Length: 63
Image (cartoon, rainbow, N blue to C red; front, side):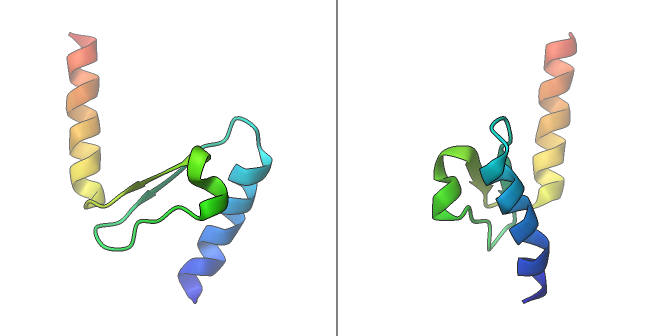
């Protein structure tokens, strides 16, 4: 139950704030609630790999 206590406030903020976008990163359990389907993204990957890919993309842009 503890992860739900952490996620739910972020889901509520994303739902309420017009410009907000929710991203869930988890190798097994990434999910976006149905109410946020158009304002969220679930990435089923290890967060370390996601950050490594993000850094590589940023480096490409900077070149």
